Image (cartoon, rainbow, N blue to C red; front, top):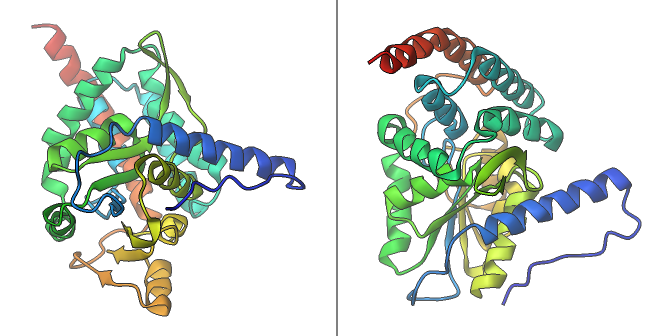
Length: 299
């Protein structure tokens, strides 16, 4: 069986040590929040792990989450500006700086500070039903269904808030989800994360922690993603698969003989243009959202 590797941090630079510790905290928190192990799978040692953004759905689940919050008047123009700026900085730097990733996700989650856990769960359900349901990739769902039909658990693995990732998994009939875990005290969000966002190495740590908990053999497991940022996740399992891959992942997949699926007819926006459009589009919609919220409150 695969064991969650801890490794020694002796001799590692302090900043790297802090990042590795944060990766592990985030991964363990995600595994702890994933929910119970599936009951009596056909093969208890095999599972499939799917990234969400541009793998299961079109676009950024975090953006859709923020959009839904804006439509309900839960995000102010200042919140939106901070979120968009952090997302743009993260995209421009290629998604490799965990501090920028944390800034992007924490900016997107700032509006939840002080709110009850149940309220955010309800928002996640509304966001999926109203916005995300029409943005699913049928081809990816077919791949996931093959595993489900074979009696193999299917887990989502995403930097999206675990509350949103969990709702997506439930709606799609998947086993569960590993996502970014926010700190909750006395049933309310503090606005901080546990560890770092579930991104890059943190995803592989989460999968390893889940494998240890459920007795999975990672050599026999599958992982699906669109991004080279998920190479730590993809190389953690024995069967990596590229879905709608970016250029770097496509090259890696070809070099290593990994299966490649492309369900997109064309790529309309680049990685950098999308967050820029987010900044403009969401900010432009803020006034409308506020007006809608005010109108609802007046009735």
